[in-house]
Amino acid sequence: MVISENRTNIAYRCNDCGMTITGIVGTFMLAKGQLVKLKCSCQNENKLVLQALPDGKVQITIPCIACGGTHSFKITKDLFFSKDDFTLQCPYSGISVFFSGSDENIEKNLLESAEDLKNLFAAMGIEDPQTVFDNRAEINHPEQFIDRHMQDVVLFVLGDLADEHKIFCDCEDGGDFLVESRENKITVSCKKCHKKLDIEPDNSLSANAILEADSITLK
Ligand SMILES: [Zn+2]
Ligand SMILES: [Zn+2]
Ligand SMILES: [Zn+2]
Image 1: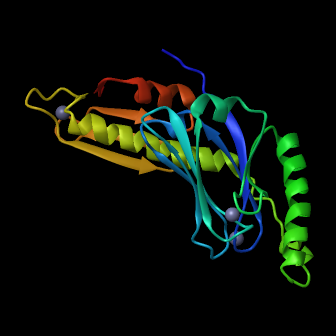
Image 2: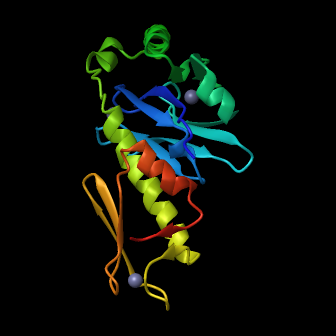
Image 3: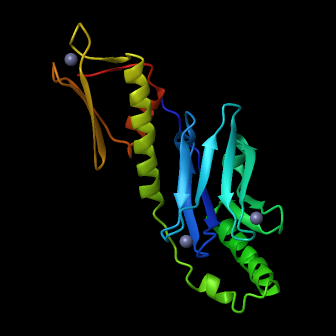
């Protein structure tokens, strides 16, 4: 069974340095209660966190550049992946702090909120709010972002399968399994009979097969 993955672009601003951080989120990454985290490359430890809830909604937790607080929103997964032009606002300032949809719409909404933020900071007496945005750099490594998270999701699912004794090999009394994660490959092998299975998390067919599997058999 092959299920095509829905993906959407997301962006937010670091609440410390003001840099725009972008990523791509796919349905697989939001499987099985996994947390998807997006963080600035600066010292700021605050992260944007996405989590798929059991009721089918996505919880989005955003460190807010406008008020310095943290805001949490819940929206349905369908809405999250279908909206081409979507923003969430800081409830205190009304300024957009989360962006998703097409690249063009995200760019447009980011520009709009930059104006709002400049006005807000100016009103707060910050002398040169422009400096907040001058260091804006693009962190566009969406593919790496996906692969890294996909790797986490696959490892998580393998852990589940192992716990439930759903990994099979040639050993009749049950194998002794080893999971090794290398650059672009996860290998599950049995230390006793040496059967194995390679999974490429960046290959959606291979990864999808694992995510959909009720059990796996090493060959
Ligand atoms: Zn930052
Ligand atoms: Zn806020
Ligand atoms: Zn074995």
